[in-house]
Image (cartoon, rainbow, N blue to C red; front, top):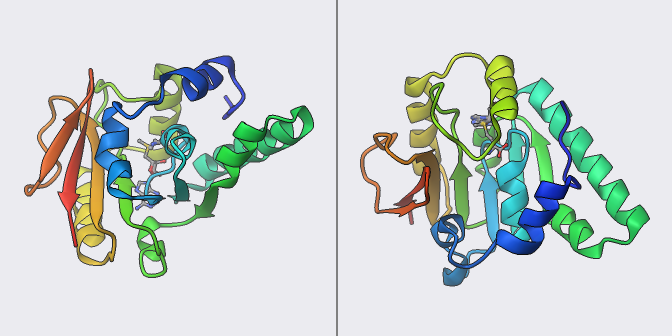
Amino acid sequence: MKVDFTASDITHMRTHTLGKKQPLFRALGVEKGISHILDASAGLGGDLFKISCMGLKVSAYERNPYVFALLADGYLRGLQWAETNGDNELLAALQRVDLHWGNAEEGLAEFPGQAIFFDPMFPPKAKGALSGKEMQALHDLCGEVDLEAQKEELRTFLQSSSAQRLIVKQPLKAQPLMAGVNHSFKGKSLRYDLYVIN
Ligand SMILES: C[S@@+](CC[C@H](N)C(=O)[O-])C[C@H]1O[C@@H](n2cnc3c(N)ncnc32)[C@H](O)[C@@H]1O
């Protein structure tokens, strides 16, 4: 398995399906001037790439070394492909991303951006943005889902950040990870819960 930002389905998504009506776009607050996101759960890069293709800068954190290695490898190959093939749009989208290996909590203090995006691992069987194969690989690499630990992470993001908003991706029908959601932006199988922070 590899991360491939040049795959045809990803290119189709980049050039056809990202728009202002997307719940993710609305949840991030792009129309309210948000332009820099901290992705606290980079994973295999699906969401951070969507966000950067919407024109936003993304500082992304992934703590699992194996997942990070897959992501970094795909990122570097993507950059190389874009340069070699003169795909300036892809190049710009990738250059808007900076990847960090480590806990997102460590990046909070120096993060100058305005919103945090958090996509915690869903319990098995819930539908997410990643395909079954990719999600299975993430589950294998990251281990069991620990909802209490996810709630603790969320509390840290809410308490220790100077960002204006926190967006948490959830399965459509799941209970919110924590009380206090200000608004939910719903898609077909997913929901983005918005916590207004500052
Ligand atoms: C469901 S996956 C994210 C999938 C990602 N949104 C994508 O599109 O590929 C969750 C990932 O977040 C990482 N993660 C969770 N909490 C984290 C934290 N506090 N700091 C850094 N990485 C974190 C996990 O290691 C896992 O790889």
